[in-house]
Length: 190
Image 1 (tube, one colour):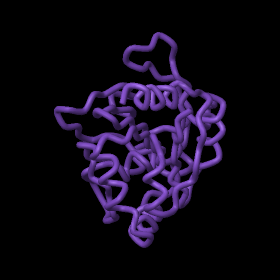
Image 2 (cartoon, helix red, strand yellow):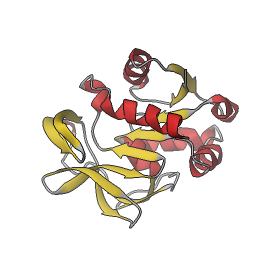
Image 3 (spheres, helix red, strand yellow):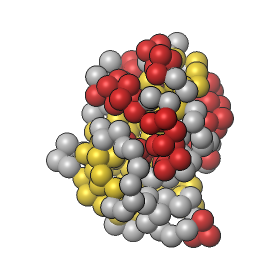
């Protein structure tokens, strides 16, 4: 049974735990660098990316997270997690892990009041995914190794690069475990 770490500095940790446990995985909340060594996969949840980045830096997690992900740790980032994984953001300063070759635009669809839900077509999946967008970012630019899996209004909202899956939306809030299942498949392949 894989052990999935969920970065638990801030954000929607419980929702990810619930879906992963329903899929048969064990979970552990990650708050310290040494806790990263025991996990088979990692989720970086949605929340407030600037706060999460500053807390990750404060607790000495940025370099250990970067190293584990660069070494092939299957990783799934949602919303703020997408931002933290990115190499670049279009505006603002914050610690980034820089492991996903994308430029991210924060709050691309507007503020909290502009949050919305939509059904997305995922590349390779015939069943649309119900997606919850909350102050959602988008991928403004993607490197050559980045595969765009889903778009909304011609803007990339889900990408994959090797061992990294990232979404601008929150599948955990729509109670859809397909992307979490993809993460667990990466563990099995590894």
